[in-house]
Image (cartoon, rainbow, N blue to C red; front, top):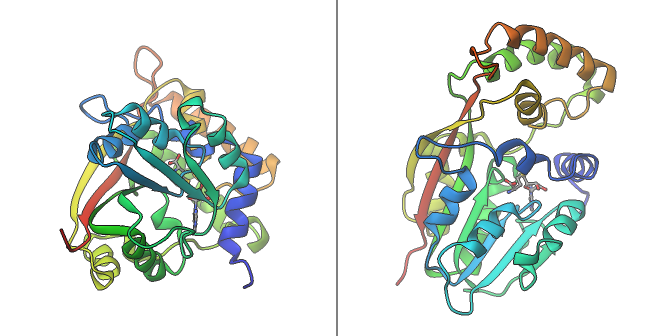
Length: 277
Ligand SMILES: C[S@@+](CC[C@H](N)C(=O)[O-])C[C@H]1O[C@@H](n2cnc3c(N)ncnc32)[C@H](O)[C@@H]1O
């Protein structure tokens, strides 16, 4: 099979930007002070055999490992990126985990192998997502839980809106070779669309919550959070430097008295379970 363009892009991006997503999002907090990784980990507390779909550098699996201890817990993760998987393998907490380079569309696990699957900011990037749903239904045991975090755009924290306003015209005007490939299935952005993907595979209708993740902080941290969300991934370095300068100038007017730049994104937390007991 010819590798889809978005998968080649993701592999290259994560090779060039190790741990990009965890660097971008792990300092984010909801209104109760939990990170989005902790929110997903909380949802699978008590489940013994857990898969992380698109596990990246393993930050979510590490949260799951640190969560409620469950006897003989078996943790597994798959990802396209050998570079991020190498980082996951270096985490002492994941010494016993199964971490495999694999496509979500072809999971290297037997039927009924997991009690739960978590996936943080990954499903919405995947092509042929109906096949991913069928694979999840195959590897989850009856009654298995699926807990997803999906991107939901800016949440009124101002710096994310500024970032989009500055970057979109630059990306739109860039030659095709400097623009990232189209990724994912737009149905994953809406509750009804996600149900249309998951229910034919055997999942119940999802519960769907919007959680505001606060990414406010020093300018450098906010820039890292926003600039590693893929959109700038193929722009030349000079164009990124120029965007950083205009962002820095614009963000100065947003700064709170202590210098903090307000920034927030919405995340959709969707949960469902596979039919059966
Ligand atoms: C935004 S990153 C999230 C990584 C990690 N879950 C986190 O939040 O830190 C998306 C991840 O999904 C992986 N991914 C995307 N499509 C995939 C697919 N079809 N099969 C396996 N992994 C995939 C990418 O390689 C990337 O590591």
